Length: 212
Image 1: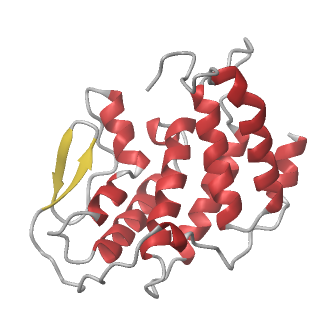
Image 2 (image 1 turned 135 degrees about the horizontal axis):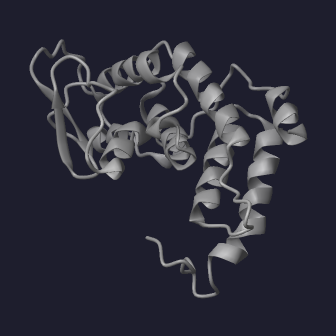
């Protein structure tokens, strides 16, 4: 609780930092008012929708449900040549998700691993397309909210067993720390990763539990 309070009270700079150097320059896609059916790629196939997805939908396979909330589809859309403007469409989808799921924090969308994936995928996406003069204030506020939630729900278990999930948590907090130029977050996330990696990854570089 002391660490959480320190992070909550720390500086989340409104001047966020993108990681643009990770990407090659690519030609901008023209914006288009696309009215037809759209789709996003989930863990098992494509999910089709008309205007915006039903963010409350639940599939028989919880992994499929969680993949909707992990936002990996933001990155796969960047490579879709048929997408007229993946930046505008992606930001539209993010904002619609925030409006529906942002206040809930009690379902599969707020599983800690899923929150970590969502933070990373969002920051990577914004770093690719975030410089296009879009209004990102709502998204930045939500990323701060997700970060604080994850800090409060790190995947440490009472039995002392750690899994690769805590490294995922640490990675997300590191991304967020760099994004918000928040040294407290960077230090916490670095400590998590350095402390846990030898427990989780063996000398040959494989995860001990056999997870992919």
